[in-house]
Amino acid sequence: MKTEPGQTVIDNGVLIDGTGAPEIKDGCVIIKDGLIEYVGTRQNAPLLPESIRRIDANGGTILPGLVEAHFHATYFNIRTLEDLDIKYPVEYVSLLASVNCRLALECGYTAARSGGCLFNVDVWLRTAIENDLIPGPRLSPSGREICSAGGLMDWNPEFRKIGMEGLVFIINGADDARKAVRALVKDGVEWVKTYPTGDAAAPDVNDHHTLCMTFDEMHAVVQTAHNHGMKVTGHCRATEGIKNALRAGYDTIEHGTFMDDESMDLLLERDVPVIPALYFEKASVDRGHEFGLSQQVIDGHQETLDGGAASALRILRAGGRLGMGGDYGFGWNPHGDYARELTYFTKEVGFTPLETIKCATRTGAEIMGRGHDLGTLEVGKLGDVLVVDGNLIDEIALLEDRNCFIAVLQGGCLKAGRLAPRQDTRVTVDG
Image (tube, rainbow, N blue to C red; front, side, top):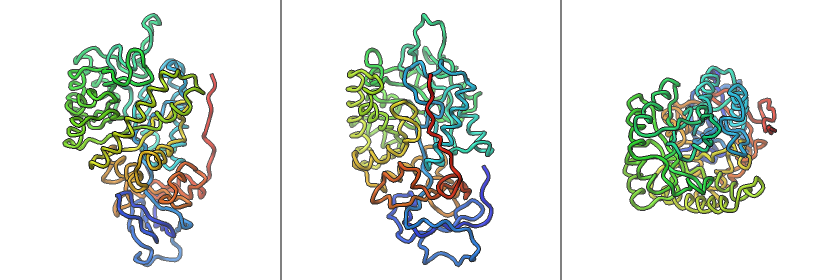
């Protein structure tokens, strides 16, 4: 991805550096040739030529570009299970995903970690974004997912005589698990996404307290993936599934919904980040009836929401690490609403604005394996910066409104916001 040559100064705003440190009232960031050269107060900034490019924060907030740590680029207004894998061909899915990537960038998300993707599209999205063919967040891809036969993602009835190969590898045993990971090695993914547990969306046979993979299968996935330099994550709601993932050596935990004392001790001992992805649960409760979800499913999502919120706050207060990513791409939880997750954690779970922003920037970058060059405003890191018209300490919900964005920069290049041309990418797909 290209960087902007020359110098750019961003000032006249409150600076939040993403490390969790207190905000700087009269903040200033200087970017030179795409890298951050100075972060601090305007008063202490070096003398700059009058001709330097300047972005005026208008008394608002200067912060790192946000990181969506559970990004489903190929999910597009999913309403029924048939929307996954079998509804659209890979060619159309690729086009839809490119629209989602552009929208994510316009929403201030300059980087993202995939939480599962149809047809391996996210690997090629990463290539297209890095080569400036399409706009989007810097992307860490995961490709197709892994689930045991009869598990949460093996929903397609046998009588249809069609597989789920575009979405998920269905495995039976450790040997199948290794085979699936080796296919992902060839695909070029960075993350292997698995389904150790069920979900409230499948209350009859694979609910949120059900195990959907054996420990042997999970351990085989980790051994094979780590051997090839890939990381492993998993959809983990049930307590025993969380413990199995931690014992197997998972690198992150998606959701981590029902944590007990033993799972907390394991998590903190290994310093494994958790991505709660709670806004999907909240949206399912708030809008489920509108989209035909049964009361049984909605009640399950409420239990998951309550358990997940309690676990997330407990993890944070115990010194654990959390990333932000709300499982967007469903009809009731669409792309473009990403920052609602941040508002929810701040206003309803009990995080401070600075804690939420740290999770959505620094920790997100660490989860991607990019903590060395992304996620915080520090000298030497890439100039991925979001400038918001308004004080996020007073009202974090400003991040939900793209009209409040003065500038979104990647490597110092202006990509979105008021200062850049913008098209509305909130598209509805019929059919």
